[in-house]
Image (tube, rainbow, N blue to C red; front, side, top):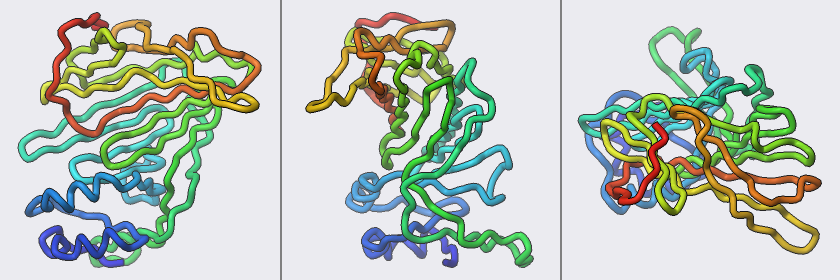
Length: 261
């Protein structure tokens, strides 16, 4: 497909949203989509491109959207949030993790992405595959990480195999001014541009006949380093820990917080 500017594409957005393809925007957008089109777009799933030299070589997969770009490398996830006059770069690292996990795209999506940049066809990238999920296998011993989500949030799903220790998992946020845990257990990322509110983690195990929800929570390990307390769970069964990162800034504040600076 050929890239076009946002000004030319905006009138076609309702039609494009109905097609099983992904169109990437390059360059600075000239105007924002209408509220209705933007709301529809935000309901679409994240689409992960395999990196075929269209960005930094350290990046394995990337996902683009209105106001955000997510870059996935072997050692960190880099989230870039953009507003008309603001650009916020946040990095989520995993201390003590495997520096070379196996990284693969899952849930193949229809369509491909092509980059026709410049006049030299040797530098073009064509038929770049798209995926709905990216999996890091053995990020920690016995623990995998899956990224998915939609245009409003990134879903980080840690899959803990039987016998593995969920206490191994932790992450550090770089690019934030401070972190706080509020009374309900949500993680607040205070930045120069505002607050990003990560809901408290969701933990569960699938049993023989039902799904068991668990009362897990975030816990502090060090400055800007947070992990999970899985509470009481069956160590002989797989455990899933889901942490959600919103792709927008929240206007809410917390009256009762526990600082984890």
